[in-house]
Image 1: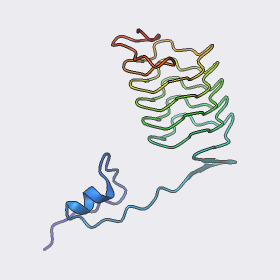
Image 2: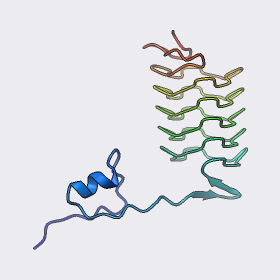
Image 3: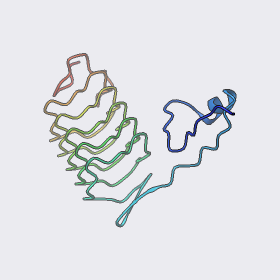
Amino acid sequence: MPIGASLTAVLLLGISQAGISQAGIPAQVPAAPPVVLADCTIGPATQCPGQPLAGARLRGTDLSEANLRGADLTGANLRGATLNKANLRGADMRKANLRGADLSKANLSGADLGQANLRGANLLQAIVAGTNLFAADLTGAIWVDGRTCQLGSIGTCVL
């Protein structure tokens, strides 16, 4: 009797197709289908202003140059997502997981990032005027001026 397991619908974080093949595991890793919402397809240059995306699981998603102005991203998982040059003006991102996300050159003016996890995020040249960072964890984040936020950077970047 062969020994094995089905890996259907299993997320193998940090393991590439090549790594799976080298381990002797035959696998086909299909490209992830785009996430489609009413009038909105999630991906680079997305046009989804005001979309309700609360709790969305968008880990590692490329949202570069996306228009998410005023979107509800409360509690969304955007860990490792690419949001460079994204328009997040006025977006509600309270309690969102943005750990390691690339927010370089993003417009975050007026956005609510209260209690968000921004550990290790890249905020280089981001626009943060009027952004709420109350209780947000910025430890290890690259701040708008290129300096790294120190341990204890809660609600503000301690340089």
